[in-house]
Amino acid sequence: MALGENRMAGRLEALRQETLALYYAYRDPRVSWGARAVAALVVAYALSPVDLIPDFVPLLGYLDDLVLVPLGIWLVLRMIPPEVMADARARAITGLEAGSPTMRAGVAIVIAIWLLALALTAWIVWRATR
Image (cartoon, rainbow, N blue to C red; front, side, top):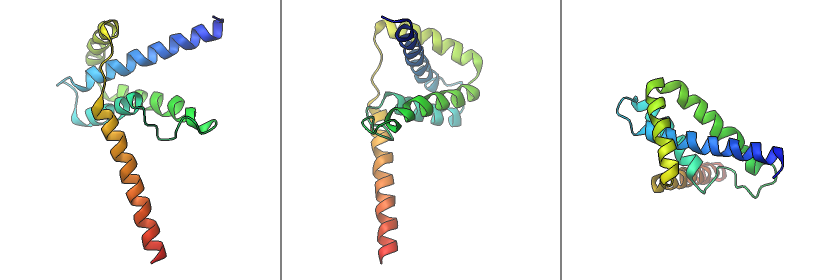
């Protein structure tokens, strides 16, 4: 494996660990409801197989994963108390060793957002052509 590939694999593993830590922090009662909402969206998007821009779209397909997920993590980290994140990161290390949780609710949230966007677009087109 080349040095660049090894570094990328390390970063992907760190992103996976941080996403799992956010999942645990989201469930912590010490976290405010606003931070929980944003964390739930970020974790749902990161774990969901449905992307805002599908991966098969050239260049843009992976751009949302490379920009939106880290930006969301950055935002949530600013909202969650450091001691909560320290506890969540410790749980994430243990959780990765045991196997990551699946988040069916995350898939449902992303699909609901897609359906809402589709319905809104249809309504706008209907109003414009009426």
